[in-house]
Image (cartoon, rainbow, N blue to C red):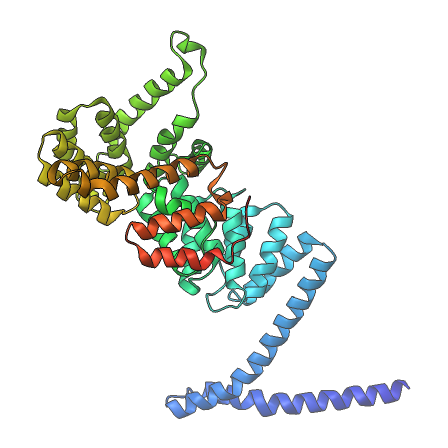
Length: 425
């Protein structure tokens, strides 16, 4: 038996040597002879490349099998070690990055997990699922919301109809009070039929949204980005639903203390961020409420160019002109405001007053009714525990209001989606 085994081993060695000499040596000779023409280079590559690919693919399969075995056995440190070795050989292997992310999560290295999930190429069939998982990590335990937003945009660049990406973007921009971006993603998600349940409510309340947990979220995000302007401003504006309780303010109510603190903060932000639209809107609102027309005029004279595309500032102009009895200018400004946001019931109500004085009560009747409908919808939406539980009845009212406001396309989109939404009491 030993003799037979020896002869078999010798035969295998001879055949292997023959194959090696027959395939590798010609390639070596081509290299040694310094191929200078395209033909010679092609001959060199065509002889070496198949052998290398055979070795490379074999190594990759062995790594994958070992990693899967380690994962099945829940040997997370071993899986981490194997995937790192695998990636040294093949940095672009999506399976290796996914398995490294799995090991990292099990070993509670969540930042490594999130970074690993971003390494898959956009063409990898598993890329979108990996990126969605990355977004969930970034928004929770890793707390890197700005990267979560960029990841969502990357997902939509691959496939614009991924509901989770739209949901996260709408959540983020609503919580951080970035209203222009919020409107964009609300409308786009409804058009693509992949909107989250709260999109319809945000469609008609984008100018007035406020959350009881808005301060909590923005404060959490500020831990990671302590100087990020939108988070600083949004946290201050959300303070309305989070009154202060401090022994230092014994002579005032908690609400008064909150107002004092928030006003001081927003005064400071007006100096630091003079072109921030949320800061400017806050100061307009407080001055409008107090009837300080001169201060409103001063703010209007310093508006940045970005305010041209925000309906709120045309509403403020309309209010100012109305107070000065410049009715034609007021009507022009308010109509411009409605062209930017046709669902703002306050603007429609103000325009109705202008039209009543310019053209009489009959001309303003429809506007008054529509403004009242919008106001009632806004109140009904504010009473919801959260915008996700809006029932079909409320959504039908929203669709009707949207259509009456002149946006038939968006009204049809909402009506078409109602059939696929479960009934909510």
